[in-house]
Image 1 (cartoon, rainbow over the protein chains, first blue to last red):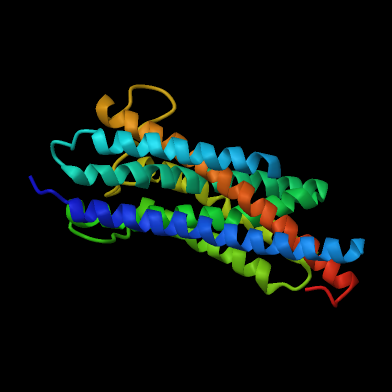
Image 2: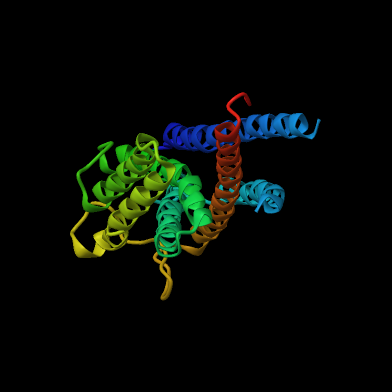
Length: 46
Length: 226
């Protein structure tokens, strides 16, 4: 019976890249937006 | 919603940890060998691609019916999440298909209807970004969501309506599962983990979209911000 481990690694690699990459990218975007909003809030409070 | 994001993130990590442990310790299939492990990421991704579309369909109905801005926000937040699930479904299915079917792709009813779903997801994001007026963009997107919802039963029943290369459902809502218990446990665990992952990603994106809308509103009031 063939092992097919390379296919399994490929499939999990793609899943990790897509889900991990998307999570990281959206977290970075969310953090950046939050900081911009905080700066505006601070600016408005002064 | 923002308060739930942290717990959902930790729950995702925990559920994926348990799921991946069960995937690694599950036996190989007597015919498919280790390639059966691709199923543990492929099937949950496919279920989530459909579930997210069902979610945005309900949100689109609420948006159009009640003119709810929050429902529109949820549609905008969830579309890229569904895109990711649909893309991984097709990629992992293709990787599994090569050793098992001898082909990366076949114009089979299940595969083609899933490809239509991915194109729909991409089209929804493209439509929203193509229209400048956010109200019109939201309404047009919700209408397209409802038109595209016709693909959901086609995907679900494609393996019973047509003679397809794709095998029938591995587990159904009722009746005996068509899969051995030792292989079913990790599949159920990964399915649960992907549901939690989907919830986390939608919450993460909902916060992001809400902040972006607030920032755009502030910039409209006073263009010097930024």
